Image (cartoon, rainbow, N blue to C red):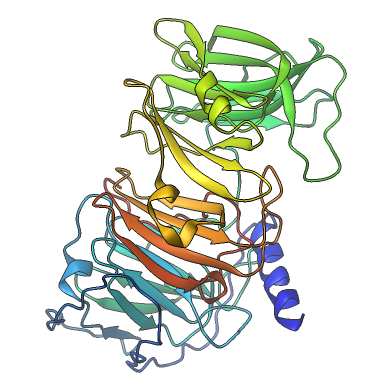
Length: 428
């Protein structure tokens, strides 16, 4: 129970809105220490020889060089995984684990200071926040360069780059719903000028529920409810009855559909120009450029007694990704929008039988999947503070590597899909 409370407090801190303020304290001196790898169950894990990395000249006593394996220093599209890790039941982790999704090999790094937030700055740098929380600011910041293994520790005031906020938000910086209006209004923030304009009418009798941007920010989907609406007080699914699609280049409404059966607030762009949404338990596709809507009934026919929830797509895959939850199990599946083929990744591995897939994250090009699962069930639309969950990693070649309990990775209670994104970015 104490462990659950500590984890609960940790997650709550991550979810609080923050405005950084900085203070300075003397910096501690780090000493290199790479712990031995704890026992972790893995399937077909290949251990590679780790060669020494090139050691740059260091002038700061708070910098050290790690002999990272070659696969971490020279990654590939989709890149490596970086996950928070600690096996000592601390409130915050003090280690990070790098994982090679090709063969499941792991490399543990002891940061010497606990951290409460981390993120990839680009495809070479990972930043960690220490001694603070998302309600205030970090006192210290670590920067790990995976291309040369250099790990630097800074005070927040001397950190050489910009510091990202650690607030979790389901809305984008370009568009958001302003709830200062009784019905809410979708506002667009011009990225060049910062000017704010309204895309929807705050007095038209339509409540704006959720927004979703396309990959290149060309299109915006807004789930709305035409009529009297109140948000549920619990974590029950939220449904609208209207979906509107805007062209953000012209800021004009392009398409609008009304569904009496209700539209789940979570929608997904399958690729750059096609949108998917759930009409109750039936997925529907909107082909934006041709202005055609079609609904996919064979998904509902295959899972008639299940709740179906769309996953966020990789934008490099023509398949519609989704979850299904029944009383017996839950899986991760995909539907090919071109061929009509329907298959489930979780059907291919025995470890997922009689399990519920409750969380996921995939690499930039969709080559790899990180999947969280549990045998204890998952209420729709998402599990709330799930327990006894586990992580597994799969690649396109059909290999699976089990990573162990999610508790070790400080994952279970975070938003879905996994935030912050643990995958190395490719183009940033």
